Image (cartoon, rainbow, N blue to C red; front, side, top):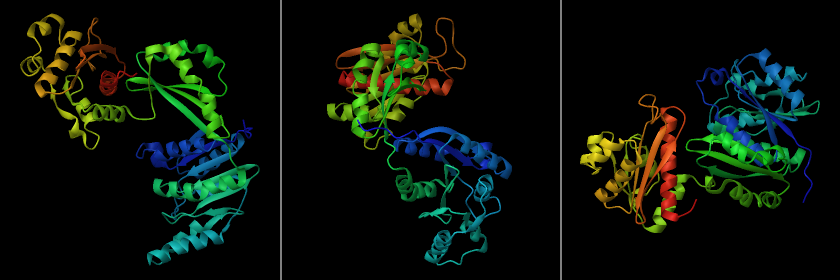
Length: 421
């Protein structure tokens, strides 16, 4: 295998008081983290700073003490509040100067638009001494790349479209020019069903304690735990070689709890399975209130396999519309295996479909008891091979329980169609 270069540590800095106030969701940092990791860089730190010069300077100095590469977004515009360039210059002890490439880029933007350049845009031409201006094909403010005292700083515009354009068109070639290939980072991602996070960790504890390359990580999602195995290597082929044994290792350790790979969404898998089988589906939903049906119809062309559904929130609708026997409701209650099975079979019969899927449970925050706590959900699936129901014990608030139920319902439907995990 090729030898990996020394690990390049990256810090991502986001500027703007609107991010700290919660007025704007920071999608830039998530996108940048993904792209930097794909390039083989290690994003080890993320910081968010308001529009305060002293704090911004302090943040740059701290980043320089622990990162080889600092990538900052925001604050490159023409207003007095756009302080990223002067703050960086002061933090690294450089003066601002008129950068002729930046001047050309800014003037070209306005010439191409047939507009006169406003005088404040001259601020966008002032970069720290020795900087390289990075072309912004989607906006005015050029990006900035400058190296000082062993640290490389890259400043990107805040608007997502501009940030992505500068990164793709200018930052990628800049990084290749100065740092060469950093290798690749590749992950295999799995959905683990029916285990709590501590149970999953216990099953893999010896592997977790000795992990090096690949590494193991867990991430809680609605309806499952994402298990991520990540390898770093110089080429994609070498990374895949490192990952290859892990599928068998995980299946031996986790058995039926190890579900699908996460390259495709659950909805994509269900859609493909229904279309391949020429099958149709109907829903009967209580606690999810139509969420499973909504998910099934999110895909264009879903009319080819979704016939419809019943939101059977009340026992009366369960009985009169879906045909759930009244004695089941009286004896076992609406939240039960028996009722979930009858709901699934009932909607399948009512709408004449290949499969029927049902949900009945207690989403909370109230309504739970000692024997039927909040988070208890039964999911029924009825199809050509028969009708079954599955007990689930979800945790979280009302919305997360409903989302978890919808995700698990699609997974169980997928299993019924394909016989796969």
